[in-house]
Image (cartoon, rainbow, N blue to C red; front, side, top):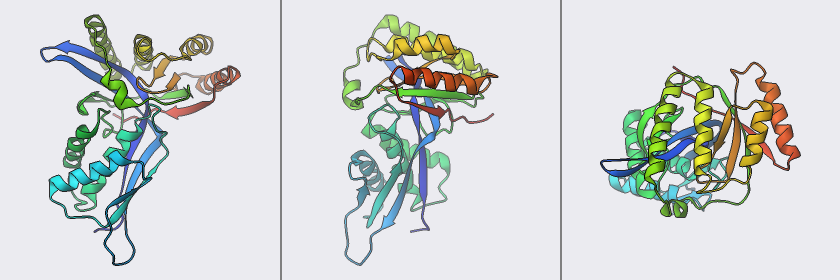
Length: 299
């Protein structure tokens, strides 16, 4: 085994847009990721001490899907048993909408390959990691270092964007958690909404290609409003009110989580002041706030 390999995948602040379209193959679910700099999952292999053979393990012990990803991919590639522990070092909160499970799975799947064949080309590593991820859950495409549009039920990349939005997200957590797998099993679909989502998809694609940070935030707000009958956000009314008062560009939510937040951009000349006053006003309403930086792939 080569010197220590560490693989890293970033979490997200919910999604900029999530919905579905209707076409020749029926309803097709999609999302636009909102990766953030501050959240990440890292995976590494730690060989067991001593000579006694032990089973492959993982820490924290509750990361069962990540362990399954390593085991499935090892079996598919014909790798022998691994006398190691996978250590996941993650600061991504679980069951909140930060894509913690997907980040763990993809970091661990990449580790499986990199630990044996460090020189494997990145596109091959990504394809193999996604092949096992889609067996385990619906999820985001998190292997592009910026915003990506993807088929939500297969992790398939639709478009990888290179942007200069310079977003800051001021987030609140409404508490509790959402069991994502169960949530997606009960997903009503509507032809009228599908048409609206198709229009929003096109609008967001245009905004991202043009670095139109304000128009992209408006689409995020529309997505939050459309989804509010599916998973209501108690904070949405407060966020909208503070958006108007502090000149935020829009609202971003976790469509299958407990997160919601306001969007600002460092393109705004008084960005820092707006963010400070927004946090102060949210905290005066009883919310605990955190700020996140949109992770972007540069042009």
